[in-house]
Length: 584
Image (cartoon, rainbow, N blue to C red):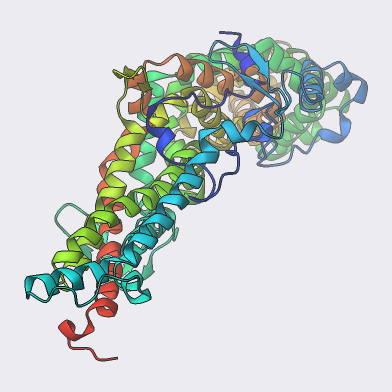
């Protein structure tokens, strides 16, 4: 496998062949022979620094930055490389026409001939399905006549006519597998929609719930994923920190000396404000009579030591990062405040699997409908149709979910065909999509910095800041401290030092937000996650994402079964209204 950085600028390979996916379209409509859609380069190719770079308070010291200093910044060089990667021409390793292989190498997609699609199973599958449906409808036209002929033969009336095709026979029998296919497709579409939306509860009495372990609203609805956002976020971050990455490792990649260089253009103005505000607010009498030359010398001395102060502060921060950054709380808060973000995680990473669930409902529903049609030939009780609707709605989802995640490890069949869960076959693609979403939307550098500054553990961060600022003041104040002690006493010096700590704390967000883009590049969270996810054994990869929503799969299945029962009942009203007391 190539380096993490190179893998991050390349798109993953298209899904492997084999497995159960040959039975159904994975993308597109069930009857469409169009080529499968794949994630674009903008979703899995060269990454931008995210929509949230620079989020938070704007640094008030930007106007004094020397442009020539920024031109020589390491960050600008990295951004230029990233921009060049995004603007690369088609056919280059980062262009949309190229996919990264599981081993990290890239192979360009060759242009296909106009007739190449004729040799693909994805072309012939819907064609054969249409032929089968047409044949079923034609055959069903003779079923009523065949039944009438059997009845006449049982009654001993031979030669009184033969079975002839009729439209009534098509509507009575041929419509059953077609309606079953629509039920399978429609219930899966609606069930998937209900898994994700609405984001907030819609209805009445939100605390009234269905028991039996389902925990579903009784008089309204909220998407299952948004409803379980907190639990799913907790499981997700636990799995990620246990299997993939540690927060200490991520922050250790920030070289304190590089951080000091990045913030150096801000320091002159910031130190001046800190020293003067501390003097005016915390020891105003002394500061008013202190000569301007002495004030300036004090500022200059503090400025000289400010870079080392930043270096020492970041070294200490890295040692205690797990004590000042609540990564789990940060992630959970991110998902609960923006429930659509959790939806996007699932919809992006599992896009092809969700399309497979939707389309497989049509195919499986049709085949189940053929069995239902045979049963209906001999048993015409009204309850047959809703029962079959439950069967279709339930088992289309069960089969689809089973095919997505099982078998976990590739299995070679007697025919030479290798089968594996559809989601597991896309490990390289999912790894790229998941790591991109986490790095740019969930744990972007701006989010981590905001959590440091505003999170529940910010008190411990302030202790680290105060410790290093106070030490720096003692180091640079050896000449000026006697002035304070002789003029107004030791208490004034303590007040001034405490004031510098407080004012520096107030200015810390400006420094931290200034390094957001730099930190996003240096931490390499996305490439690291992608590389390690790709190397996970299949059973660990399956657990990493499947465990998040596994306990709620039954809700998707039951929603499909309930919707199937409703549609089956409507079908029974149309087929046998007299048995239900209706007359049309």
